[in-house]
Image (cartoon, rainbow, N blue to C red; front, side, top):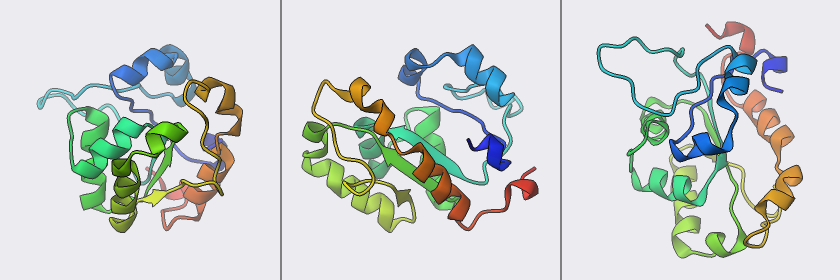
Length: 162
């Protein structure tokens, strides 16, 4: 959907996230390598610098580590830097009702929002699911709202992207 709007899409995932995706298919679709590990300092970056970032699906773990400033994966390192670089960033948490009830989660969302991250979260975005039912609720994930929000952010138009 983002490509149809003119965005050059790159995918970065956590090392554990690689188990949930078909990396060759994503690379073929985007035309870019999928990264999950830091590169060596002497290596050129394989991806262009971001003009906007979507963190989706943002897990309970990712939201809490990001808000705590933990950068123990490439994905989290880029997210913690994005706040300091003022890169427009949208996070779309996907978690269950029990995880969301943990006090740290709500606090983490408040922190991220106060630092300029657009967090699409709440019953108006999509209702939380019960533990163990996440795969049964994927059809409710707000991809359209995510892209609409991206296109409404103060970012260069897709045609201005390098």
